[in-house]
Length: 323
Length: 291
Image 1 (cartoon, rainbow over the protein chains, first blue to last red):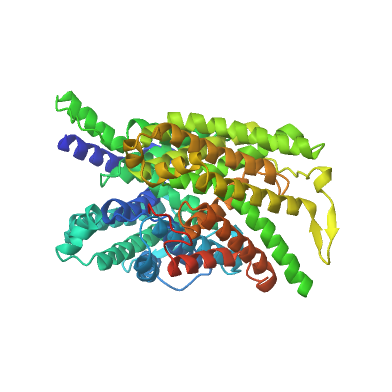
Image 2: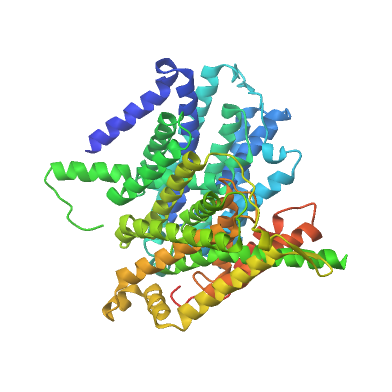
């Protein structure tokens, strides 16, 4: 089963890498967009599955990255665009750090979730005031950059170059998140999620660890956001509001919250549903709503959890316990 | 200048009680299910559309208007029965995030169905003739606004008395506080939960029917009120009707005075107030014992 999982992961990777040669440009656009959403969902899941914090306002950090890179491109900042994703990540992490040290002192559980929701809605309101950020209409017609790599230049106006730019940065981000989760910080986070009191008892500084987790997560979300401007060429407040914040939650629970790769499966599933239902007004919402209900009621472990159980059952090892 | 503030305060009260009408059901649902029922906003919207479909652009009389709101409440309450049997009851033992996601699924479902059933147009609905007048008491006061204030107070008193004084309300509170213990004590937990969920849904439908003429009727109607209602439930104390009542009025006044005091920064007061109040008093104005 481990082998099957690794094989499917490899197939997925190859599919992402070869997409421009296999499918039509519309689907390539969706693939690039899905990669951005994957990084965003993984950054959220870092909080949810590993640190046990449910953020309802994560799109605010995504928005920081998106608007930084949109502004840099739209107003022609003289800066190598290769530096924009790291700069966005640092800014997002800094903002997340400030939020975390204030919010986590006072609130946890549902209060934490609603405070993050309120803060992100405040960001939406503030964007609406700003002429520079294009009020409620956002920033559109964002030019794609030409990146100077020293020995060569990378012109993102070439569709292939911009696709691989998004995919490579996205894969780097995924690899970094994987390292965080599987390293000592990730293990400590899990301890805190499972039992904060006991974790504190064995000497883990719970509050500090949550701040670290929130900071890292905000940084990765901003990194994902910074890829949006050159790819979609439009950034608007709808990417920042509470419905955008709910997307990683769906993706994670749909794919399987207990799995590192759960959000990836979830994002791809949602992207496929949206694509398949794109021509029917209202029907896409009905289908997504219905599939969320089906997953919750029939496979509460998500798609990956259902697959794992199916494999176990075929081998005769019925788990048996009620979850 | 003075009358401007008076007018803002009056408008704030109307908005506050309107928010309370929506958040009363959400508060009740939170007490029982311990989650934010995202679908609440959608059912509020469906309730408003139902009333609109029954009365047209202007209800012929106050009784027709009230009757339509009642029908909306019954219809949404019936949806609540289905939702409880098909979804919420089956998710009683799993972590709350899954109920949350189910509620979001129901939200998307009802949004999609409404899009197909009602279309994307924006409608303007007028209050019935009996409520459409304006009184002049120094400032122009709409009778419909007074009606909303009155309806909000009536719903508040009914819930407050019903939950805290009547035997049935006490049973519901017992289940909200500790379903396991209530079960041990021999209460019919499932049936009481069903009753509360249906009541919460019906309140959403009722609010939709009563507030249909308060603003333009569109598919986005649920969103703005839903966010207010979230703020109210948190600040009120997670399931406390009394807290929700006070918080609703606070948010209504904040939003309304925002337009007078800070006209260049629309919409900032609500979220700032929420953040300040939660940081000062994270447990809420009237913390529920079970939290």
